[in-house]
Amino acid sequence: MLNIDMRKIYNFYPIEPAPDSAALPTAGDIYYECLDCTVIVNSMPHIKSACACGNLSGSGGKLEVMDPTRVRVVKGKLK
Image 1 (cartoon, rainbow, N blue to C red):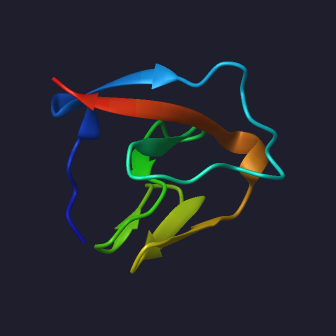
Image 2: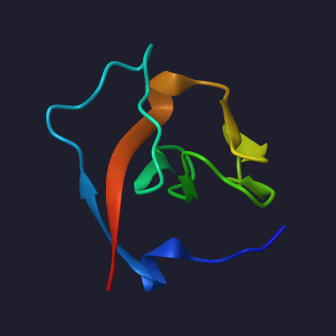
């Protein structure tokens, strides 16, 4: 698993209005920021990805969210 700080590559902007935590959106440019450890993970990771506290983890295009209420949905754009 790569330990890359996504903020060095992308600018992130919160999606407004914030989506319901019961139905989090997914797309190539949508990312989830864990509010507990502040790590950002793609909503559709193709390589093994996880946040430091374990709230977000996944690979193969699927992401598992342990506590959706502790996630901020953001859109990423290359710097």
